[in-house]
Length: 148
Image 1: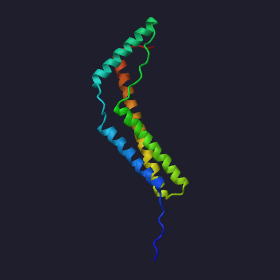
Image 2: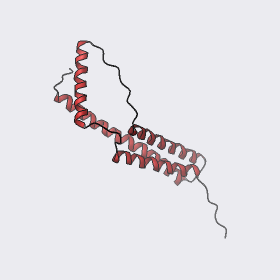
Image 3: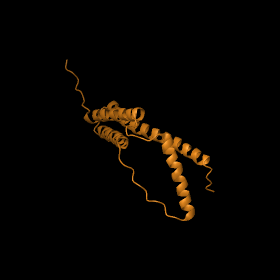
Image 4: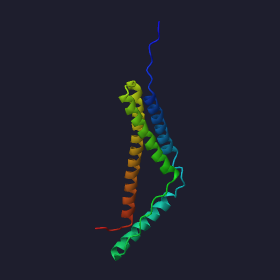
């Protein structure tokens, strides 16, 4: 008896490998990070409150606002970008594998892992943005600032 011919799936295999790496990187970064040194929440919120107050005073006086400073690149920002890029490459490789008629399970696996890594990162970012907004609103209300 002859062995059935096996189909190779190089694009889908690479998509699964990169998608899995992106997902693991996302989880490690979320649960073990942040890796860059950060100030305590009290210091950060205090600086934010002072900056809001100074900005309001400058606006009332008609003074110009200071120029925006670019955010520096740190390990956390690099990891977030690398995770999204690796997940996107996994998705592109899965699509190429689909076009090349590679096995569907491998293609779907690579696409799913890459998309899950990106979606997980976006959902976590969205949750932190909502929580941060709620904290800033509570902080502004506690300062009794009236913007109306």
